[in-house]
Structures are given as structure tokens and as C-alpha cells.
Image 1 (cartoon, rainbow, N blue to C red):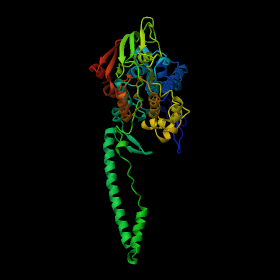
Image 2 (image 1 turned 120 degrees about the horizontal axis):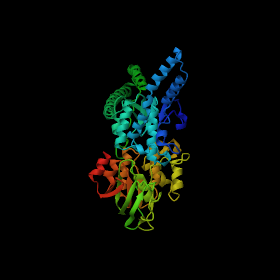
Image 3 (image 1 turned 45 degrees about the vertical axis):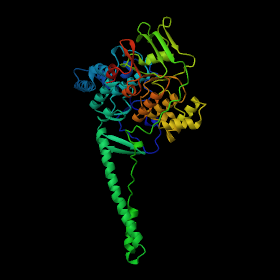
Image 4 (image 1 turned 90 degrees about the horizontal axis):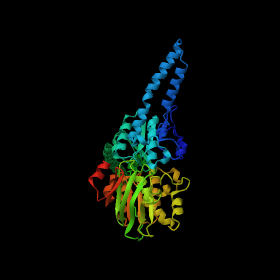
Length: 498
């Protein structure tokens, strides 16, 4: 959060962006807090400039106070009023409320940011932005990485916020709490002063009005052209024909924008994802026995993890935030070792098992100074240029987006590049950590369909109900430090996502 140089966010083709002097603009950066060595608490509160300045002014006024000088007394009074208006001595309570609302337990507040996963790092960045209280907040998919409770807190916070908020989101509930909707269609903006549900209704009404107006205009032009054709050569009607020709030339023709199914906001078509065929391997893909998961031997997140999984099974990992979903996936992939390697094991079925891991950080870690096409050609040198273009195109990255430096892509476009890098290479054991983040409804539906048809083993950690209901053959629930595997989808799993 905090003020940003607009030029750093991407080039302007023309025009200018002006921010009124003294006004602050805050946004949620893609890189979150990567590289921060501060604690969660310190990083979250690091941009509270108004409160910090008010506290400095108060300290200064107290230091210069002379009880015999009315000017210094008035100065202290003004400084005290400003300090109270900025939150005063209740600031710690406010920081705690925001951290708690975004899912941070009190015991994690003093943990260093460097230990956080990408998802938790994004939550710290969001907390920092909310606490900085800028005059204008720019939020790109702010509900990504948030569970249901976190989404409810964010919606409530934004409704109470005194600043202006501009957000990009596919979260229907959040969109319905907005006062204005701006639709981007074919490079043009259309504004609607209403929430999202009302916008869909109003857009249909505008479309119908436009169609009626265009039909009337077409009829008027048709009648004028018929008159010209019939009487244009007659001397007695020449002036009338000429005036009708001038009228036609002056008419500003109504162009109907496309409202077809492929372009519809809620359409589930237009995106196709096909995973490569899973190479053959043993039926039993992975066996896990007695594994303790975590970073501290004295404080394991999950203990005694034991299961055996086979080809064709789709396991959705469900748990409240902070219970170790990402850490378990990293342990199964081999990024971090079990806490008890001497008394446990993780065994793959045979040497033909090939793993791929979609992490929350995959999109954030993409190289910025090359194009998606160049990145994927480096990653898969055996794939043809055409097949990579086709893969990007099927994910909605066509034309300019495929040939633009990655640093200039939106969060959603980067997520698609990351997804392309994940699905280009054939594997028979896929691990995914919040793979649906930053993806719109159409892409999530296409992803669910592709994962359902995948013939290898899939383990996906998610708080996205669409993935649970659309993909799972099995559910693994993390509860009280244990990982419990269920066949199908038990009610408890659904409740955890409500």
C-alpha cells in the first residue's frame, strides 16, 4: 500500500493520470511482501503515515509545551485532537482487528514475513493497505487468498471506509456492495451507477434500447436511400434527393457492440483447458506413513500423516487458514523434509511417477522482462511455437497479451501464464495450491473440467467451493493437527468453505 508512481505500473499510450496534491493512492502490489524481514505486525502497520505524523506532532507539541504560553497550549490541543482523529492510543486494537479479520491468529503476529507462504504474504500486504487509509484504494482481485470469513471482513471494512475504492473482482457479493460498475468492452468503458446485479439488468435494458434506436435509424436511412434511388434522376425532385443525401451523410451511425455468448460476463464457454495425457506409472502413486509436517520440530503443524493414493484419484485438501495446507503439499512434493525423517517415509509408486507443483507464488515469480511466449518456449523447448500459442490462446491470452512483457500483464493474465507453464508438460502426479486464485468464472469452470478428466493423481489445496464440488473424488480435512482422508465430500468439508 501507499503512494505509487503511476508510470511504474505500465506505459500510458496517451493522456495523463493526475492525483490531486496531498491525496494518497494505495494499491495491492503483485509481489506482496516478498523480501520483507519485518514481523507481520510491523509490516502491516508500516504505512500508517497519518497516524505516525499525528503522533510525531503530538510528541513535539508536548515537548515544547509552556504552561504560561497560550500559543503552545492551543498547539497541544490541536495536536491532541488530530491524534485522536487518527485513532489515538487505540491504534494497536485497530491493527489487531484487521490482522484477526484477515485470518492471522495472535500467535503469528510476531512471526517474520519471510516465513509466510505467498497467500499469507498477500494478506499482510492487504492488511498494510487497509491500515494505511489512502484517499483512493486500487484493489486487483483483493479476495484472492482469503477464506469466507476474510472475504466477509474485507467487504465490511470497505463499506465503512471513508476513502474511495476502485476494484477488479469476480466475487459477486463484493461487486454487489459497490455503488458504481464500469464495464470494459472492446477497449471502451461504460459506467453504470448501481451494483452488479442491477448492472446486469440495466445493461440488458441499454442493449434493447440501442437495438430499437438502431432499427429506427436503419429504417429512416433505408427510406431516404429508396427516395434517392427512385427520384434522384428527376429534375423536379433533385433538390429533395440532394437534401436526403446530406441528411444520410450527417447521421452518426449506431454501431451495435457484441453481446454474444462468448463475450458474456458470466459465460462458461470461450476458455478451453486440456491437460497433457498422464504418462503411465504404478497404480499406487504415493504412500505416506507417520509423517510430521511443519518447520519447527517442537511445534509440528500436522502429526502422523498416513495415507496411500492411486492414479485417477482427485483429493481436495480443505482446512481453515493457517493449519498447514501449503506446508503439507510442500512436504509431499519434497520442497521441505518431514520433521521426523528417521521414523517416517514418503514413497512414490515407481520411478515413472513425475510430479508437478502449482504454488501460490508461481504467478508472482514469473520473469518480468520477457513475454509469455518467450517464457514458455524456454520452459518447453520441445514444444512447437504454434502449440504454445495455441495453449495461451485456449486460456484467453491471445494477440497482444502473448507478446507483451510479463511485467505489464494484469494479475489474471499472469495467473494464466503460470497455469500454461503448469499444464504444458505431461505429468502423472499434480499438486496444486490455490490454483483457482486470480482466475475468472469461465477459466475456473474450464480448469475443473480439465482436472476431472486428468487420469493421474491430483491433490489440490483450495478454499474454492467450485473446485471441491467440481473435481473431488476424495477430501482430506486438516483438523486439530491431523490429516483425515474421506471418500467423497463430507458435510464438514462444505461447512469449512461456507
